[in-house]
Each structure stands twice: as structure tokens, then as C-alpha cells.
Image 1 (cartoon, rainbow, N blue to C red):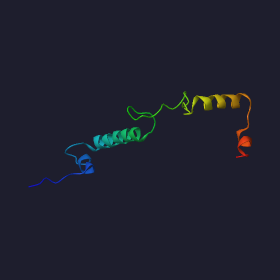
Image 2: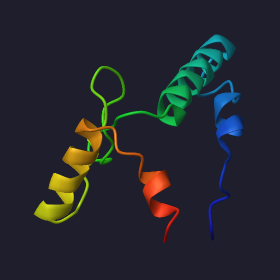
Image 3: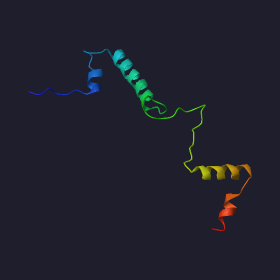
Image 4: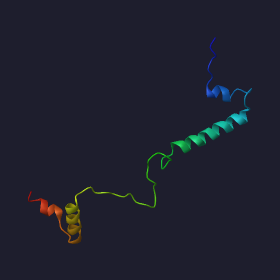
Length: 87
């Protein structure tokens, strides 16, 4: 014979387990915990970067010559859009 499964609501509001006040307190605490879980942001092992004070580091994968050219172009105010119009 298989036992009938009971829902959480049935257990919470069954006066043999909890008083009505205790059931309300359990439900309120569960709601507070659910809000904590649904909130985004950094979590251990999630692989997310911390929000806030430190900006993200952007890496550019280019050769040494290309990196030198980018540094030169930035230092001398080279307009790359204008240079590429001839292509």
C-alpha cells in the first residue's frame, strides 16, 4: 500500500504539526530565503566577476607588431576610419 503524498501547504496548515502562527512564520522565512536565492550577483563557484569597484579587464589578442601599431595610432591621434576608406 502506497502512502499518499502531502503538499507543503497541507503540512503547514495541519494543526497537528504546527500552530497557525508557526506555519505563518515558516512560510515567511521560506519567502525570505527564496528572495536571497533569486538575487543575482557573485556566488561561490559561479565564475562571475565581482560587481562594483574594479572594472573588467579587456584583453586584445594581437601580434606584437599589431600592438605596436595600435599604441602608435593612439599616441598620434590616427583616424582609422579615414584610413580604411581607401580599402
